[in-house]
Amino acid sequence: MPERPTREKTDIRLVSAMIMIAVAGIAIGLAVVGARIWFGRELQQWERRNSASYSLTTDKLPAEPRLEPLESHSPSTRGTFAAAEREKEAMLHRYGRTEEDGYVHIPIEKAMERAAKDLQASQRSNAPERKSRGLVTGGEANSGRVLAEGSP
Image 1 (cartoon, rainbow, N blue to C red):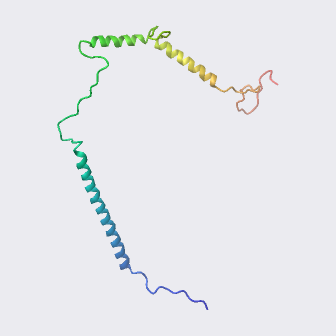
Image 2: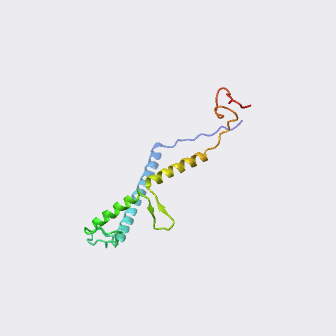
Image 3: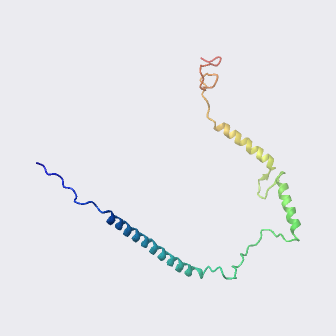
């Protein structure tokens, strides 16, 4: 006769399980609090080390950069500056020579028209050719085949 499986004499007690869970929770809590205290101290030490070089409480400001303006904007030259800007703007709308030999500039309107024409021409030349194979609609899908006149 086969042996019958043995059963546990007692189940785990609820009180001992609760005690184990409470001890684990307290241990985790203490670990978190300890880590927080340790990181807090480390942060304070880091701030003390770095606050000496980057003190915000001092009244001394860094030296201003020594940037020189491209063009002077003093009151005495303000009129000449405005005139130079108007001349640059007018140059955009007329033909003329450039500083480089062999080159000229054209009005910006003409340049934009020419660029648009070149772009349209390049887009047309890049379009793939359709094979019509004698169809009126150029090979597009349709319900019936309509042949062009004079095709086989």
